[in-house]
Image 1 (cartoon, helix red, strand yellow):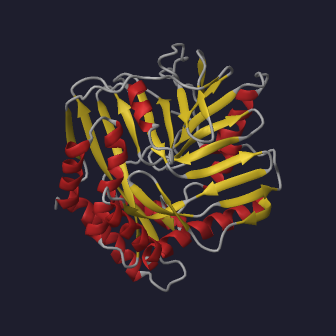
Image 2 (cartoon, helix red, strand yellow):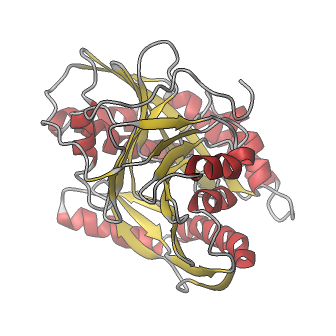
Amino acid sequence: MTSSSFDPSLRPDTGRNDPAFEFRGSAAWICAGESATAVPRGTSATLGARLARAFDGAPESTIVAGALPFDLTEEDSFWVSTSPRIGGLAGAAPSMAGWTIREMTPAAVYEAGVARALEIIAAGAGQPDGLQKLVLARRLEAMSDREIDRAALMDRLTADPAATAFMLRLPERGQGPRYLAGASPELLMEKRGDRIISHPLAGSSARSADPHADAAARASLAASSKDRHEHRHVVEFLLDTLAPLCHELRCPDGPEITSTRALWHLGTRIEGRLRDPEEPSALLATRVHPTPAVCGVPQARAAALIPELEDGPRGFYAGTVGWNDRRGDGSWYVTIRSAEIEGRVARLHAGAGLVLGSDPETERRETATKFRTFLSALGLEGAELDTLVETMEASR
């Protein structure tokens, strides 16, 4: 398909029970209106022109929402709604469907990829253009014995107040409706007038139901030089990228500990004031994506290595998803803790950041913990979920 071409699989959304997009979080709760229209597809190179056409002559209430893929040279998926709703759709708690779980990236394959990445990092140590960090992801497929209840899934994704839940329709591939769904804890770009915020997360540790073990995990992360080194790459990249765009830019001297229900994270809140307050939030997101939190350092080298070392395309995983209003304000989140939903199947990704000193088995265990958020939203919980995650952590 050529850039900016029309995709007939993206039909207008006309049903209240099947919105083209929905976001639920502390910053906003936004849902497409009863009739949302697909924006012609294209790459980030044409996004500005396509946004301008979408807003041309549209009412003040109009919102454009969409998803950008990890690779910005691939086509995105955007919708425009002239009458969005503030507040979404409520679903019943999902029934406990029967699930078949497949590790699409076997543990041994993932660890071999991590080991190879660490060899490349070690070989380039001390060299100006050497690889310093790489994020490597693995894949998991969950198949239900019935069609996945998307409204109920959205409700469960909203359960963690530290994350923003999202559901956005993607182009069909001949197997029925396809959606991108998730609960991202990481704010890539928020714009309100001339003010912007980015809150990157890099460096994490699994939480525990035991208070003492949980506190120990938090303290260990706070003291980890490896995780702080990984986090510093992300913050420096964002500061360097945003500095030419801002006349004021600030962040704290070091990261703070933040948390979701499953993980402790190192996070740094970056705030700035734009030189050009007219630039839309969606375009600002393309300027900083992909960050080292999902790609690596140097960016170009890491981006070239990822398809060589991973066993399948990322698609919209580790991209960015969000919304943009007529004023250019909006919020964009890193597409993690997410899955592609198609009928009875959920296709998940989870990744880990690799730097000098990383360990293949430890990084694989981290991906297993990151899968937990979405598996829980699918209805896997309690002992069943614990057993599944422990199996993934222990598998070789």
